[in-house]
Image (cartoon, rainbow, N blue to C red; front, side):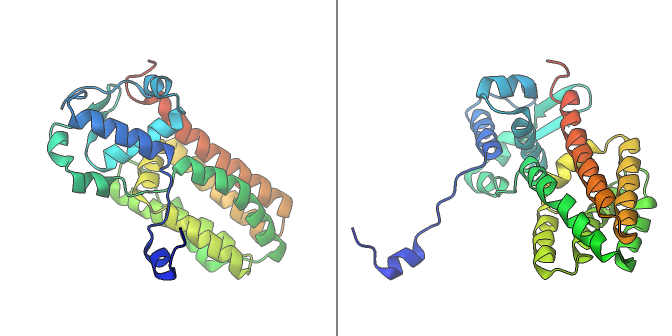
Length: 254
């Protein structure tokens, strides 16, 4: 069949669901048909990963999306439970809105690990200080309580803008555009939810703040090797903290 030009222009783009979206859709279906009932505890993330033959990080992302939508409640040390009003919330319209296609946080981290150390290296080759980056560092250094919603909001903005500003310090407009895209993804609800969980220990926030300072000082002092190494170390720690939060997931060691 030969398609007319106007037919092609209105054809819906093809899109493959991310793994976490498929898992979330499966859990939603199980809630809607009563296999998972209101108030019931979900299997542990490890068990769900085994049953569905997926990674625990993808399960973690799926549960995070359901937490954002109020479908699942996670209780410290007890696990994740179907919210009391979850069946009422899961209309077709709300389900579509819930699965709003946030990017996978672990896919974002993988991309950042491949990209940002080289951005820091390039920025360090310019060897200059930056008042905007310094202001963002000062904002983050004034924070200490990840349990505070106000401080989490400040952190969310300052953290993503700091990494964007390192890109701006390269003076390369293409790099800045790429960093803008990364910063936008870091503002998505699923990223913020999993990032907040990973910072539940105040010491982790302090470690990230210290690493931000190390990256900035290496960049501003013109040390490309150190800037690249510190950026890589920081991103690996972010991934580890996000992954470590799996250990306190749905139902402990199970």
